[in-house]
Image 1 (cartoon, rainbow over the protein chains, first blue to last red):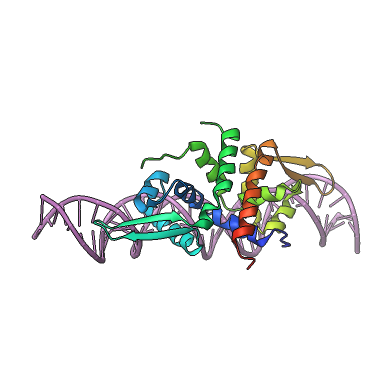
Image 2 (spheres, rainbow over the protein chains, first blue to last red):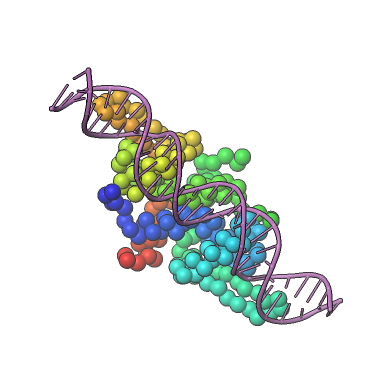
Length: 103
Length: 103
DNA sequence: TTAGTTAGTTACTTTATGTAAGTTAGTATA
DNA sequence: TATACTAACTTACATAAAGTAACTAACTAA
Protein backbone atom coordinates (compact mmCIF):
# COMPACT_ATOMS: atom_id res chain seq x y z
CA UNK A 1 0.00 0.00 0.00
CA UNK A 2 1.47 3.37 -0.96
CA UNK A 3 -0.98 6.11 -0.04
CA UNK A 4 -0.49 9.42 -1.73
CA UNK A 5 -3.70 11.16 -0.65
CA UNK A 6 -3.58 14.09 1.75
CA UNK A 7 -4.53 12.72 5.17
CA UNK A 8 -6.76 15.72 5.88
CA UNK A 9 -8.70 15.19 2.70
CA UNK A 10 -8.98 11.51 3.48
CA UNK A 11 -10.34 12.28 6.93
CA UNK A 12 -12.87 14.75 5.53
CA UNK A 13 -14.02 12.16 3.05
CA UNK A 14 -14.18 9.57 5.80
CA UNK A 15 -16.50 11.81 7.78
CA UNK A 16 -18.76 12.76 4.93
CA UNK A 17 -18.94 9.27 3.55
CA UNK A 18 -20.55 7.88 6.63
CA UNK A 19 -24.13 7.13 5.84
CA UNK A 20 -26.50 10.01 6.74
CA UNK A 21 -23.79 12.45 7.83
CA UNK A 22 -24.05 14.56 4.69
CA UNK A 23 -27.82 14.76 4.80
CA UNK A 24 -27.81 15.68 8.48
CA UNK A 25 -25.45 18.58 7.85
CA UNK A 26 -27.41 19.63 4.77
CA UNK A 27 -30.61 19.74 6.80
CA UNK A 28 -28.97 21.84 9.48
CA UNK A 29 -27.81 24.36 6.87
CA UNK A 30 -31.38 25.63 6.82
CA UNK A 31 -31.33 26.32 10.55
CA UNK A 32 -31.37 24.65 13.99
CA UNK A 33 -33.53 21.57 14.26
CA UNK A 34 -34.60 19.08 16.85
CA UNK A 35 -33.95 15.38 16.93
CA UNK A 36 -37.34 14.19 15.77
CA UNK A 37 -37.43 16.75 12.99
CA UNK A 38 -34.12 15.60 11.50
CA UNK A 39 -35.21 12.02 11.93
CA UNK A 40 -38.37 12.47 9.91
CA UNK A 41 -37.01 14.85 7.28
CA UNK A 42 -34.26 12.55 6.07
CA UNK A 43 -35.62 9.17 7.16
CA UNK A 44 -32.72 8.09 9.35
CA UNK A 45 -33.36 5.79 12.29
CA UNK A 46 -33.11 7.20 15.81
CA UNK A 47 -30.39 4.77 16.68
CA UNK A 48 -28.06 5.97 13.93
CA UNK A 49 -29.07 9.64 14.19
CA UNK A 50 -28.13 9.63 17.86
CA UNK A 51 -24.76 8.10 17.02
CA UNK A 52 -24.06 10.56 14.18
CA UNK A 53 -25.02 13.64 16.18
CA UNK A 54 -22.61 12.58 18.92
CA UNK A 55 -19.82 12.10 16.39
CA UNK A 56 -20.53 15.44 14.74
CA UNK A 57 -20.56 17.16 18.11
CA UNK A 58 -17.20 15.61 18.93
CA UNK A 59 -15.86 16.83 15.61
CA UNK A 60 -17.01 20.35 16.44
CA UNK A 61 -19.33 20.46 13.45
CA UNK A 62 -22.63 20.36 15.34
CA UNK A 63 -23.71 22.06 18.55
CA UNK A 64 -26.37 20.73 20.95
CA UNK A 65 -28.50 23.04 23.04
CA UNK A 66 -31.00 22.09 25.74
CA UNK A 67 -34.07 24.21 26.44
CA UNK A 68 -35.71 23.05 29.68
CA UNK A 69 -39.27 23.55 28.52
CA UNK A 70 -42.07 21.03 28.73
CA UNK A 71 -41.52 18.69 27.14
CA UNK A 72 -37.82 19.37 26.90
CA UNK A 73 -36.61 20.87 23.64
CA UNK A 74 -33.16 20.07 22.33
CA UNK A 75 -31.84 21.86 19.30
CA UNK A 76 -29.03 20.85 17.01
CA UNK A 77 -27.27 23.44 14.90
CA UNK A 78 -24.08 23.90 12.90
CA UNK A 79 -20.96 25.48 14.34
CA UNK A 80 -18.78 27.74 12.22
CA UNK A 81 -16.89 24.66 11.10
CA UNK A 82 -20.15 23.08 10.03
CA UNK A 83 -21.39 26.16 8.20
CA UNK A 84 -18.09 26.20 6.31
CA UNK A 85 -19.31 23.10 4.51
CA UNK A 86 -21.96 25.07 2.68
CA UNK A 87 -19.98 25.71 -0.56
CA UNK A 88 -19.30 22.02 -0.73
CA UNK A 89 -23.00 21.24 -0.37
CA UNK A 90 -23.85 23.78 -3.06
CA UNK A 91 -21.51 22.07 -5.50
CA UNK A 92 -23.16 18.77 -4.74
CA UNK A 93 -26.54 20.37 -5.38
CA UNK A 94 -25.37 21.72 -8.74
CA UNK A 95 -23.94 18.41 -9.82
CA UNK A 96 -27.08 16.52 -8.86
CA UNK A 97 -29.23 19.01 -10.77
CA UNK A 98 -27.07 18.82 -13.87
CA UNK A 99 -26.28 15.13 -14.01
CA UNK A 100 -28.96 13.12 -12.28
CA UNK A 101 -32.39 12.27 -13.58
CA UNK A 102 -35.40 13.62 -11.75
CA UNK A 103 -36.57 9.98 -11.61
CA UNK B 1 -41.73 10.61 7.76
CA UNK B 2 -42.05 13.82 5.74
CA UNK B 3 -39.10 14.16 3.43
CA UNK B 4 -38.42 17.60 2.10
CA UNK B 5 -35.04 17.00 0.49
CA UNK B 6 -34.66 17.09 -3.27
CA UNK B 7 -34.55 13.48 -4.46
CA UNK B 8 -31.68 14.21 -6.84
CA UNK B 9 -29.58 15.68 -4.08
CA UNK B 10 -30.44 12.74 -1.89
CA UNK B 11 -29.36 10.32 -4.58
CA UNK B 12 -26.10 12.18 -5.15
CA UNK B 13 -25.39 12.06 -1.44
CA UNK B 14 -26.32 8.39 -1.37
CA UNK B 15 -23.72 7.69 -4.06
CA UNK B 16 -20.94 9.73 -2.52
CA UNK B 17 -21.58 8.49 0.97
CA UNK B 18 -20.81 4.93 0.10
CA UNK B 19 -17.50 4.04 1.60
CA UNK B 20 -14.54 4.58 -0.79
CA UNK B 21 -16.59 6.05 -3.63
CA UNK B 22 -15.38 9.59 -3.03
CA UNK B 23 -11.74 8.60 -2.80
CA UNK B 24 -11.95 6.50 -5.94
CA UNK B 25 -13.33 9.43 -7.92
CA UNK B 26 -10.78 11.78 -6.38
CA UNK B 27 -7.96 9.49 -7.44
CA UNK B 28 -9.27 9.30 -10.98
CA UNK B 29 -9.35 13.09 -11.21
CA UNK B 30 -5.60 12.95 -11.65
CA UNK B 31 -5.90 10.66 -14.67
CA UNK B 32 -6.76 7.10 -15.75
CA UNK B 33 -5.59 4.37 -13.43
CA UNK B 34 -5.59 0.64 -13.21
CA UNK B 35 -7.21 -1.55 -10.62
CA UNK B 36 -4.16 -2.38 -8.54
CA UNK B 37 -3.03 1.24 -8.56
CA UNK B 38 -6.31 2.50 -7.13
CA UNK B 39 -6.33 -0.35 -4.67
CA UNK B 40 -2.94 0.52 -3.24
CA UNK B 41 -3.25 4.30 -3.39
CA UNK B 42 -6.35 4.52 -1.21
CA UNK B 43 -6.15 1.22 0.67
CA UNK B 44 -9.48 -0.25 -0.36
CA UNK B 45 -9.86 -4.02 -0.59
CA UNK B 46 -10.15 -5.65 -4.01
CA UNK B 47 -13.56 -7.01 -3.18
CA UNK B 48 -15.07 -3.61 -2.50
CA UNK B 49 -13.12 -1.80 -5.21
CA UNK B 50 -14.49 -4.21 -7.80
CA UNK B 51 -18.03 -3.60 -6.52
CA UNK B 52 -17.63 0.19 -6.52
CA UNK B 53 -16.13 0.38 -9.99
CA UNK B 54 -19.06 -1.60 -11.36
CA UNK B 55 -21.54 0.69 -9.65
CA UNK B 56 -19.74 3.79 -10.89
CA UNK B 57 -19.63 2.38 -14.40
CA UNK B 58 -23.39 1.74 -14.25
CA UNK B 59 -23.91 5.30 -13.06
CA UNK B 60 -21.95 6.57 -16.04
CA UNK B 61 -19.34 8.18 -13.82
CA UNK B 62 -16.46 5.84 -14.62
CA UNK B 63 -15.34 4.26 -17.90
CA UNK B 64 -13.47 0.95 -18.21
CA UNK B 65 -11.05 0.28 -21.05
CA UNK B 66 -9.27 -2.97 -21.86
CA UNK B 67 -5.83 -3.01 -23.47
CA UNK B 68 -4.96 -6.54 -24.59
CA UNK B 69 -1.28 -6.35 -23.74
CA UNK B 70 0.66 -8.83 -21.68
CA UNK B 71 -0.36 -9.00 -18.99
CA UNK B 72 -3.67 -7.38 -19.80
CA UNK B 73 -3.99 -3.73 -18.84
CA UNK B 74 -7.34 -2.35 -17.79
CA UNK B 75 -7.73 1.36 -17.24
CA UNK B 76 -10.42 3.17 -15.32
CA UNK B 77 -11.11 6.82 -16.00
CA UNK B 78 -13.78 9.43 -15.37
CA UNK B 79 -16.49 10.23 -17.89
CA UNK B 80 -17.69 13.79 -18.40
CA UNK B 81 -20.21 13.21 -15.63
CA UNK B 82 -17.41 12.09 -13.34
CA UNK B 83 -15.15 15.01 -14.21
CA UNK B 84 -18.04 17.31 -13.38
CA UNK B 85 -17.53 16.36 -9.76
CA UNK B 86 -14.22 18.20 -9.64
CA UNK B 87 -15.54 21.51 -8.19
CA UNK B 88 -17.18 19.52 -5.45
CA UNK B 89 -13.91 17.76 -4.66
CA UNK B 90 -12.06 21.07 -4.63
CA UNK B 91 -14.45 22.44 -2.02
CA UNK B 92 -13.90 19.37 0.08
CA UNK B 93 -10.15 19.91 -0.25
CA UNK B 94 -10.48 23.53 0.86
CA UNK B 95 -12.62 22.64 3.85
CA UNK B 96 -10.28 19.91 4.97
CA UNK B 97 -7.29 22.27 4.69
CA UNK B 98 -9.03 25.00 6.65
CA UNK B 99 -10.76 23.03 9.34
CA UNK B 100 -8.99 19.77 10.00
CA UNK B 101 -5.81 19.25 11.91
CA UNK B 102 -2.77 17.90 10.12
CA UNK B 103 -2.80 15.22 12.86
C1' DT C 1 -53.52 6.85 38.20
C1' DT C 2 -53.14 6.65 33.44
C1' DA C 3 -51.58 8.76 29.40
C1' DG C 4 -48.75 11.78 26.41
C1' DT C 5 -44.41 14.08 24.97
C1' DT C 6 -39.35 14.35 23.40
C1' DA C 7 -35.13 12.36 23.28
C1' DG C 8 -33.02 9.03 23.43
C1' DT C 9 -31.24 3.57 24.43
C1' DT C 10 -31.33 -1.57 24.08
C1' DA C 11 -31.67 -6.07 22.02
C1' DC C 12 -31.88 -8.33 17.97
C1' DT C 13 -31.72 -8.91 12.69
C1' DT C 14 -30.02 -7.72 8.24
C1' DT C 15 -26.64 -5.63 5.31
C1' DA C 16 -21.99 -3.94 4.24
C1' DT C 17 -17.18 -4.35 4.52
C1' DG C 18 -12.63 -6.65 5.56
C1' DT C 19 -9.50 -10.69 4.91
C1' DA C 20 -7.36 -14.10 2.66
C1' DA C 21 -7.35 -17.69 -0.54
C1' DG C 22 -8.67 -19.11 -5.21
C1' DT C 23 -9.60 -18.33 -10.47
C1' DT C 24 -8.70 -17.00 -15.36
C1' DA C 25 -5.96 -15.85 -19.26
C1' DG C 26 -1.84 -15.03 -21.19
C1' DT C 27 3.00 -15.42 -21.42
C1' DA C 28 7.80 -16.49 -19.63
C1' DT C 29 11.18 -19.54 -17.55
C1' DA C 30 13.51 -24.07 -16.18
C1' DT D 1 6.48 -30.18 -20.50
C1' DA D 2 5.82 -28.32 -16.11
C1' DT D 3 6.14 -24.61 -13.03
C1' DA D 4 5.77 -19.85 -12.25
C1' DC D 5 4.34 -15.00 -12.80
C1' DT D 6 1.19 -11.18 -13.57
C1' DA D 7 -3.19 -8.36 -13.39
C1' DA D 8 -7.76 -8.37 -12.46
C1' DC D 9 -10.98 -10.18 -10.33
C1' DT D 10 -14.19 -13.61 -7.47
C1' DT D 11 -15.45 -16.55 -3.53
C1' DA D 12 -16.09 -17.98 1.17
C1' DC D 13 -16.05 -16.67 5.56
C1' DA D 14 -15.63 -13.28 9.71
C1' DT D 15 -16.48 -8.82 11.64
C1' DA D 16 -18.55 -4.25 11.75
C1' DA D 17 -22.24 -1.06 10.66
C1' DA D 18 -27.06 -0.04 10.02
C1' DG D 19 -32.21 -1.09 10.31
C1' DT D 20 -36.29 -2.29 13.34
C1' DA D 21 -39.04 -2.18 17.04
C1' DA D 22 -39.73 -2.16 21.75
C1' DC D 23 -38.34 0.14 25.96
C1' DT D 24 -36.72 4.04 29.37
C1' DA D 25 -36.38 8.72 31.70
C1' DA D 26 -38.22 12.94 33.00
C1' DC D 27 -41.78 15.77 32.99
C1' DT D 28 -46.78 17.37 32.67
C1' DA D 29 -51.67 17.03 31.88
C1' DA D 30 -56.22 14.86 32.40
